[in-house]
Length: 379
Image (cartoon, rainbow, N blue to C red; front, side, top):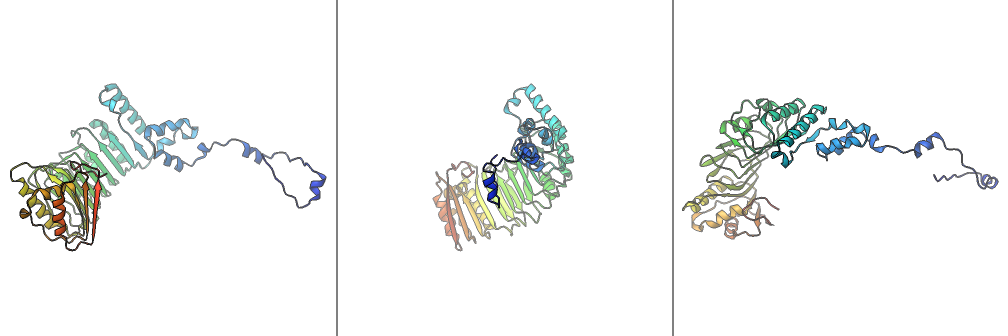
């Protein structure tokens, strides 16, 4: 160690031109000794590191330090994803299930924020959901490859749930719903009957965001939450001729994707300020062009008051395929208009029709994407 001393008496250096340094103190020995900085990290920092790792990798950190051997059990961010090979190997599937159950049994976190459940069987998922409910979970995502599994009734009484995303579940019967803390809800590839979706939405008094993607079985969406901010309907499969949407406090509505023949009817949406339309009705009857034109006209009439309008390629194609004399669009009050068009866009006539019906327009944006018109996801 380099040591530099300054003295107020210069004669001191003359008497001792090469003074001997004092013996090292205990403090110096402590400085020179190696410090295990990994073990000295606060638990909060270690758990923050775990939040960037999968559960399996977090467990592997046990070899770094004796102190780390059990800290992973307090990790509130737990993620499981079954490898694809488990789907074809029964032994590997059982091994994966055993691993998950062993991990959950050792978890000591009082509040588990994230649970990702993929490709499992009903009784096993029930146990996992029971565990997360008992630990006051806030976020849950379930991804299944079939719609056989039905959520257990006790899960609908989880009052701490804030965000819920489910793919591939069945909602044939739904009892009382008490999701009093839920703010974000996403259903993907799910069958939802009218009574089921009404019970669910009525049981979410502070819901802010809802997305229904590739869903079917219902004809009416009614949301009463005063905090409702955004609704997304993506690639809806109609069970009847009309899907009615009623949300008096909704601020933003997005209708996307390819839908089977039907009609969207929007009612009681006076609070809407922003709407995105990028959907296409798949119909091939001789008069489907006029029918789609009537759909466009009716929908825009109910949305004429919105101040921001986003129009995508799929919707513009519908306008372009109709004869000008068949569709007379209502006067729109939008001041902010955006067109999202793909590289292979062929809906110039639709753009012209929208512009002709926007006398109060203040801002126009043309956004080009690299996405083919057969899809709706932007780049």
